Length: 235
Length: 235
DNA sequence: CAGTATCCGATGCGATACTG
DNA sequence: CAGTATCGCATCGGATACTG
Image (cartoon, rainbow over all chains, first blue to last red; front, side, top):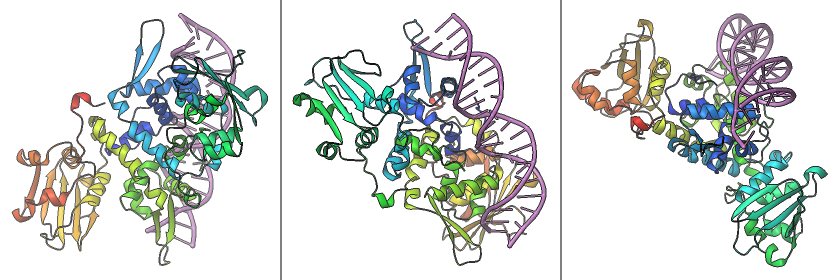
């Protein structure tokens, strides 16, 4: 962990960049800002990051006063929590995400979407609804993904949402049949989900009283409401 | 220059971080946003960056659509200019600087201030005034800096401000006698300049009609108006 | 669950020297 | 002024295996 100044400038931008510019750090902050507190939860949000590096980064953030490492109720349950200064990084993280959503071309990013990451992201923003049974179980069948990774289950229970990659003989209420690229696009707000339902590139199979609410309980990315620039202007 | 995706996430934050997180890139954007267009001007804003690396970064930014490289009026005069997407990064750069100004402890950053960088920064924000003669020449004498780097001249002429490190037998109007740490602090808004004038830790020597305007023509950092958190809360 | 230790290859980047 | 080419070290970080 490198805490010494690389830039040698008193400029606050330089001082902030000293650690915000480190590989993975912004993404870790995103996870924390979205509410993850456990090591494994954070790790699932940055699946390509090695756990040892995540460990180092978390230590650095503790040392810098961005997060606290707390051992709640003994039992090795560690909680990472943003300090007030860490919480104040929200606008920084958000402005960078907003710029990306507005200006960046999407094509490169959907070439190799990590299935696990997408599902974990969906779990995070899925919306429990009182109109749904308890539990309410949704199976995602990603029809263009290799077999052993193509099925995922979202379990709505007691106002929480869990994610599972293994079939536990669930009593599935709704099946979502869609390609991973299409799912990414509609969930990110890059394409209109109503249109995708119309042309059946995404299909919700189950009782109509549940499928007609799909657009709500599925949720969407927290930047989905930010409009992309027209294709010709993107970079 | 690495344009391939390191994070493998469609998340716009990850996509943006792919290049905004690169060493020096945010500082280069700061220079461009503040109006530098030439290679050497940009380079003076990032004095510890090697020129070959700056060259590479600029190329990358061109490739990504953040800046344009234009050869104005032939004659090898190259201008780097932000595209619309590049300009839109202003809020990102600013939010990061703002967070740093608000939350970061200043002590580490003033331990080893680069004199050249500070003077270049001051030049950028100095304010030409109609009440001043033309030219108006200010000598900075940094009384705690080694002799061959302690004197700098700011030349206000025709609504432009130039900086010089060599004594050209100037007709100096005002001499500023101050330590580099104190100058940094007041210029960054970390300490009150009026107070520093009172206790004579900064001294303006010259005709009173010019020295009494010093607080104005000296200017201050573009984040100086952002209040720091009380010392106890800083990190 | 929440990490740590070690290994080792890739590459980032600073230094230096050179060009039109 | 505006770069480019080359060298070589340092460190970053991924992979793997192990721990309480």
